[in-house]
Image (cartoon, rainbow, N blue to C red; front, side, top):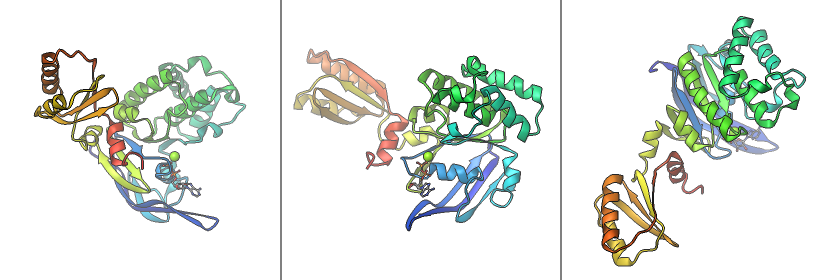
Length: 317
Ligand SMILES: Nc1ncnc2c1ncn2[C@@H]1O[C@H](COP(=O)(O)OP(=O)(O)O)[C@@H](O)[C@H]1O
Ligand SMILES: [Mg+2]
């Protein structure tokens, strides 16, 4: 786990389109560990796809170096292609429409890679079962729904057990049940096969669930890198306690004086208590409410990666 898989240094990419210059990546430095699942987060236009496509040798940067498992990615792109799996953002367009899903998977894995046909076929059946796709394996690619095409392309990126796998918004068009199965499968599979995986997503709970580390990119720069837990520690609270009731000023002051309470906010009809020791706060809050004969509905929610994201991005501004 601690061995280095990819070393990125001073990576920059500029797009020039009709006189318009976009600095998509600005001097990115990043070390990716062998076997880890790295989540790449960031708002639209942050540079996530640009980064993935450069790593997957689909795009050439303007500056910088990338070394992956001893391969110079920019100079030895053919060599790198032998060890990667890739599912791009517009991957639905990237398969042969007249082949079935099964044929597509066999074709890509078998034609381009040094793998045994029986092994691939067994692996395809295994993965399909895991993500609930078995029923659709023999359907022609063109007849599949958007989500089913997406599932096919994700399987294509993994079925040959690459050393490195790049997935650009894989769960984008998957239904919630398939997305859940996909996450469970992905995590177990890449662990078992020791596949270093770089995955972009807008789904924060997905990032939290599957990623060992996350890197947050904004306007081409890295804003944060660390575990989901470290990311959440950006915030000064661990949990939010919400009461469905507006409280009087004296009562609010009492709540604010509880040592484990970080701050209290009132919105119309509800009171939100931010705490860094939820059990202690909850006890204190309920006892204060009881003394006042108040019985609001109380909900407790832990801080999430999404909360941290909103904080770092400045409420999306
Ligand atoms: N082919 C291109 N030509 C010009 N600008 C591009 C091109 N591809 C991406 N960009 C710009 O580069 C920036 C980063 O894009 P991208 O990497 O696709 O972001 P993300 O995947 O994080 O949404 C955006 O401002 C986008 O408009
Ligand atoms: Mg993108």
